[in-house]
Image 1 (tube, rainbow, N blue to C red):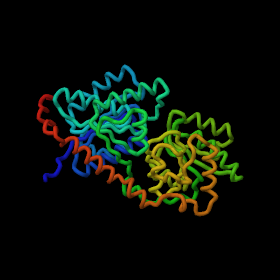
Image 2: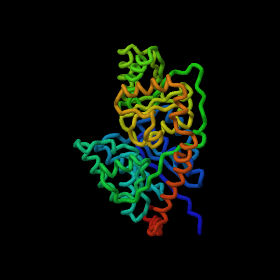
Image 3: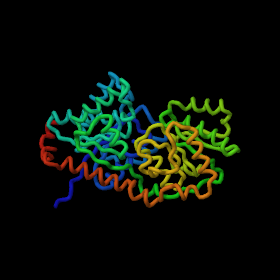
Image 4: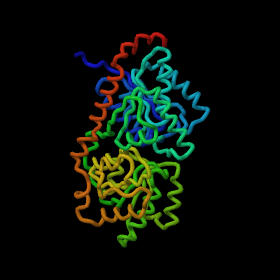
Length: 393
């Protein structure tokens, strides 16, 4: 049997921050190393110096280049221009696979891929939600619109990839049972992420690492920190590492509560640097799909306390004492106090590194995603894939 041919793969997503960006970077590196040609198309108006450094890390793997254009978070008339510019760029790259990540990335990949098919150029169209539109409620008008749009776009989708059981089940509940091919492929981290990171001698008691916006729960972190101090009966220390639209609101919150000197704030940095600053990582999100920060924290040997939301229980264990009720600062404070004061709490509660590695490995993730790409490209109708490519000239 002949070896599968190298593929031309383009990843489309909006904002190059957080878990989606991490997910795409891992796929880019793994698939490029395996001999495939990879490109990225994403927003040009988000990200900063930290994200620029991350792009520099993967630039050698991007043989199809890095394309950045302005892509708004909300739906707007300007999207028409974005779709046209995206179409022209993607058409020139002649990809075999268009993989959209997040709501806006999914729209661009599937609409452009479908437009290319009208021109008799067959390209595989995939979509991974990464939470995104699935956080909307069916009871709101905006939620009804977004979820109906998800359903409509299935007609332009060759495969849906779910990154955890929670995302798959939520899609079926809110959008409907998928009409497209589906695959459950867990997020994974690389071998270099499974290395214990020693805690510095001047470490704080707790760290929060991530976007500074209400969905991720930084306000819960501040509130629970104050309550943990009261439970333990002594002052503690913490760091909030990241950036986002609500940064100043959280700073004001800390000052008003007299915590300004005990909770520091630092800009985004590589997680390896952040993890050296504390042994205990707190992830107080109100909603998630499968956050990489959980996997990265466990891989680094850290104690992880997190909300019982999204796919987090699939990693920590559904009955783990490290899981707390979402949007509940009292419960979060209780577990933070337990982790700090109970001897042997980490070893008794955290899953083993080997068990995490066996399921949540980037090599397994990349292998399964690539297998899906080949199944779509080289399926029964794949013989048409490039026959009419001259029509794009």
